[in-house]
Every structure is written in structure tokens, then in C-alpha cells.
Image 1 (cartoon, rainbow, N blue to C red):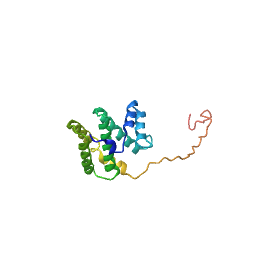
Image 2 (spheres, rainbow, N blue to C red):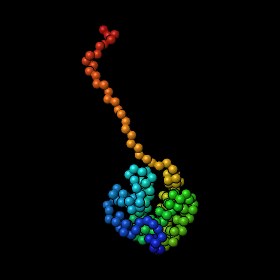
Image 3 (cartoon, rainbow, N blue to C red):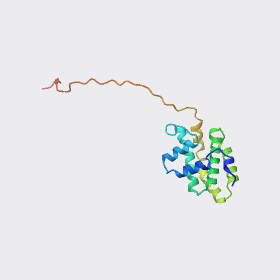
Image 4 (spheres, one colour):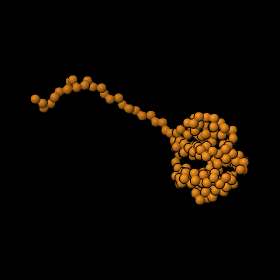
Length: 168
């Protein structure tokens, strides 16, 4: 396959090795977000969606038994297609054409190509409109801190001094 590091900005081989050495869990996901330059993973839903997108692509590669070169190529292709379709305002059709072209350029094994096409058509391209909606919505998340005053209720003497009205 073609050398992925010459075509894509994404993970480097040393970053992939570093991620592989971490135990599964939140630490590994935060490290991936940091490597990809995504900030505010914990507090920004868009950032969390983007890191999860990257994460599931890496998980797919691991489950499929891809080697380092194949993983870097697939990861880079998916990042490029995501940027083209979701962040660049492209359409799903043009994105799929670009995706197919890149996969066929980098992957020679028909079994791998079939597995990749099946995965991407049931994950990213099935949900591309949802991704576009989330990332094209111009509203920025912001955190505001406001001071509020809560008055203390008056503490009474209780019911000992109450008088029964209209009773026998």
C-alpha cells in the first residue's frame, strides 16, 4: 500500500504506538483527542463527537487486524473525508466518491476493501446528515458563571404555640 504518512495529516506511527501502549478507557480516549488537537473533550459535545469518531475508526482497525500502515491509511482517509463532507460543507455523494477512490488506492486485499466498505456504509455514511447538522450548527457552546442569592427562611418556634381555631 501507498505510504499514508505522506498523504494525510493524522496520527503518526509513534503516536499510534503510544496509544497502543495505553490501557483501554478514558485515559486512552483523552490521549487520542490531545494527539488530534481536539480541546475540551469533557465539556464540549462537538469535541466529544469528533474524538469518538476517531476512536471508533481506530477500534475498527484493531478489530479488523489491520497493521500499522493500514491503520494509519484508514484513519487518515476517514479524517480527510470527515473534513471534506462535514466541516467543508461537501455532500455525502462527493465524500463517498473520494472515500472509495482513496480506499482503492491504499488497500489491495478485496477482503479488507469489503470489510471497510461495509463498516463505513453502516457507520459514517449512514449518519453523515447527523454529523453535518451537529458541526454546521453555528451556535457555540459557552459556560457562564452567575451568582445567585438564596434567602434563608425565617426559623419559627414550631407548632407548640399554635392555637386551634374553631375547635371543640
